[in-house]
Length: 98
Image 1 (spheres, rainbow, N blue to C red):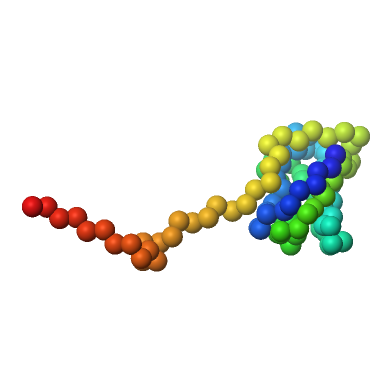
Image 2: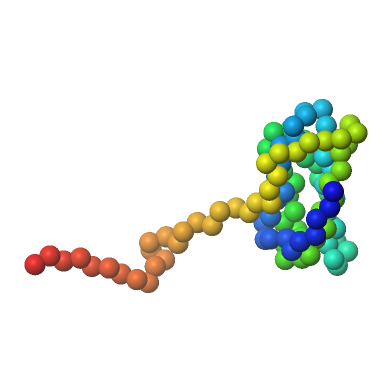
């Protein structure tokens, strides 16, 4: 199975392998020839693809160790952004009563 998409900054491919005996090999190939490899194994595994941020990337997934593999909860995830701290804000609100 393969997908082509623009890869986000700090992106990881995550998934759960429904059969612990099977691994799923991940091969990422960027349009500029760069790439990365990894394996998805077991519950909540992830492959870090942050080196390919901002590039068009082909992701190929193939079973390893068994003829077929089943994945669930497959997602391309990025870390959550923290809200700005109150000290960094330039807006000030003052409440007053009369």
